[in-house]
Every structure is written in structure tokens, then in C-alpha cells.
Length: 549
Image (tube, rainbow, N blue to C red; front, side):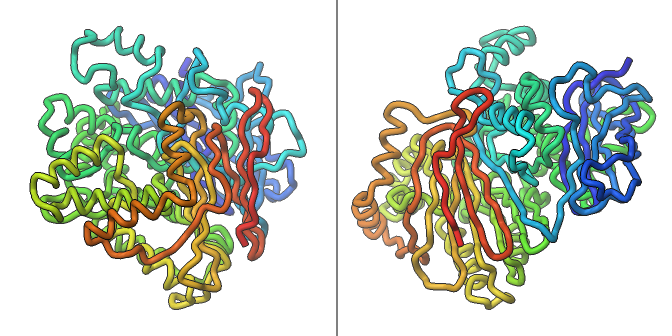
């Protein structure tokens, strides 16, 4: 009997369509069905019956089942069949039936998000799993407020900081002295990382099957400080094991994360998806095609756009890739390459009630850290000479100084776009523009105080889901958030000839250093956000809340 290896995951949804992603243990037909009963009585009685053939890459088998004909706000119980045999939901599952959940453009939009999740963690080194508590609360409380979307803004897996389970798996494949030591090496090992992250906990597996999931990667999905600088890239490509690592990381991300972020129309227009499916027809394997694509995407970032955007009623969500699409050459440096930035510029438009810009890396850091990163970029760029520039590069990599602030020209370009939208220069100004980010392992809300606009501009950070800062790292970041800290670092930046930032902002809520998940709720022209932290495997406690506008 054909079996599920991983999934199902409920991925891209709109008001009338949905996508279900699975991995299976052999080639097969994957069918998603329902009994036609909609718990809200809004599906028009059509039910669900959609199917897709698996495609194959490096001996693994995947399918994305595209479902249409749904109604806005539908909640349709569904089942998954492999070659006619029902495999999901499992007959002894303690969780409610998984539902296909479509968006309702006329209603409120609720987006829960977070980043940085170490899983599994049977030794309990990283605290309680926020996703486990979140899932159990939804499963056990009929009156709980469900998110319309679960947005994972980076570090879904840790390819360079392995747990005991992953180390044991790797020990069964290669000797401990084979490079890369204590890190994943290739596509096959990446598949095991995803299985451990998404399959081990039954509550999380159920959650991902019943709440629409959108994702974007960050550095640990590939390697710490991924694409920090041109010097970093040259160093990594000099290592004989790097090609298998980067192609395995990007290729697996394309399958496990990226494809599900897209609508059916966007997937149909993807030449790589078409080539992979064609190569899999008749029992073929598309591994070589996937590897070539992944290497090209890394070496020539402009050939692939990982960013995406979706509109839900009066809300536009723009998810920006701030890792793979960086412009890093001997003479140019940008958070996004030229093609990616033109795309982002085109998406930053008015006419919406709310504009959400999700990036794994916070756009608005604590100001002391922002000034430190702009100073370091100028230093590494040679403002004080070649020798000092080399020291700046070492400091950049050692201290992880590689956020938006460390790409000052990109920071200023995005600020120009956002202010233009907020001033109504690109259509009617929205009520709010919010950056949603993770990465830094603590949470806060920062508000832009200048220039003055009718639109509220904020940075909402939520991190980690499960990987808290400890010891000196937590203390250093607490100090960086103190009110008097920006001044000395701004002086350093000024000495390095860095112009003042085009925006002024301050942290108004937080920081909080607990494992946490944030929920942004958008209704009419109002925007609210709350942060919750797990207090047990089944309970969350609110640690912060704010009215954005």
C-alpha cells in the first residue's frame, strides 16, 4: 500500500481555490476528496474531488493537488487518497477533521506568524514548542479564533545546527569526519530535516494540514549568515562540498516550501515545474533538472524570483526573499537584485486598506543595531582603507551584521517606496503598512515617527517559535534596545560618512524574549497585533498586544 511520507500540508488558498501538498513513498495518484458537507454551509454543496500525479526528484515523490470551485469562507472537511486508498485523516486521530479553509475577502483577515523553530527537541533545550501549544489550543477549543493564514518567516529547519535525531541519521550515511561536519550535506539529508520538523509532532502535523501555510526561507534553512557578503560567497564556493549543499538546500526549498506559496496559475507558468513534471512522466527522475536549476538560482539570482504577493480583499501581503536574491558582486551590494527590486517596487502600491511586507529579516531593527550595521557596512566597504575593510568584513560575519540596515542603499530605496505609498502618491493611502519579520530571537513593535504621514507604518517582529536567546546574547540585545543606546552608534556611523536614515522610529512594545507566535488581525481600517507564548503543551499566554491603527 502506498503511504504518506509527509503531509498533507494545506498551502496556497484564495477565496475559491486551495492547494494540498504531500510527499509519498512511491509514485501514485493523489486524490483529495470530501463528502460535500461544508461546516459553514457555504460551499454550495459541491464537495471536493481533485487529483494529481506525483513527480519524482532524487528518488522522492511529491504532489500538489489543486482544488477549485470553492466558495469564499468555506470550511470543507477533506480526506487524502493514494491510488484509491484513504490515508488521511488517520482513523485513530485525536484531532478534529482537517478542513480546507478558503479566504473571505469581505471579512477580517487574521495572520499568525513566527520564525526560528528548532524541532524536534526531545531533550527540551529550546523550551516549549509554540506551534504545538497553538495547535492543541485550536484543536481543543471550539471557540478559539482561527488564523486565516500561518506565515512562517524563516528558519523552518536548521541545516547547520543539528539535533540528536539528525546527527543519528547522518551517522548512518557517512563517517563523522566527512565534510561538512555536523551539518547537512545534500538533498537527501534535507528531506530528513523536513520530515523531523513537520512529521514528528502529531499536533503540528495536524495544524499544517488544516491552516493555510505560507513560508519564506532565512539563513539557517541553508547555512548561518547565508549570502552575508561577496566575500562570504567566494569562501563558500571554494569548499568542495558546497555545491551539493547549496543545490540540495535550494532544490528542497523549491519543493517543500516555494511551490506551495504559489497559486495554481503561477505554478502553471513556472518552466521548472513543467520540466520536473515532464521528466517524471513514465517513471523518470527530475533530480538533475532540479540540481541545475538550484545552482543557477544561487549563482544568477536574477533568474529566479522567490518573493510573492497575494491580495485578500483590502489586504495585500508581499513576502520578500531577503536571502537568495541578494546582489553581491565585487562592486555592487544590495539586499535584492535589480529584477527583484523592480518587482517589489511594483507591488508597493496604494488602493489597499492594509499593506503587509513580510521579510525574514526585520526592516526596522533596534536603532543602536541599525546604526552599528550601517557603520560596519561602510567600514567593510573600505571607507577607512583596505586593511580596516578586511577587519570590517570579519566583524560582519562574526556578529551577524547583515540585516536590511547592512544594505543601506536597499534600506533607503524601500523607505522611498513606503513613504510614497503612505503619502498617497501611488493611489489611495492605506490605513497601515506593516513589516512582518522574525530572525532575531525576540519580539517587538516599532513605530515610524517621521516623516509624518496619514498611514501608520510599523515593524512587527515575532521570533522565535522555539529557539530562545540565552546568556550573553540575550543581555546584549536587551542593552541594544535601551533608550540611550542609539547615540554612540549613530556617531560611529556618522564618522564612517553614513547619512542619517530616511525614517525615524522607536520600539513602543517589547522586547519580549520568550518563544512566541504573533497574530495580526485586519478588519476594516483597523489593525491589531498580539503576541502569545506557550505556558504548557496545550496553553498559550498573551505577553503583549497593541492597536496599530
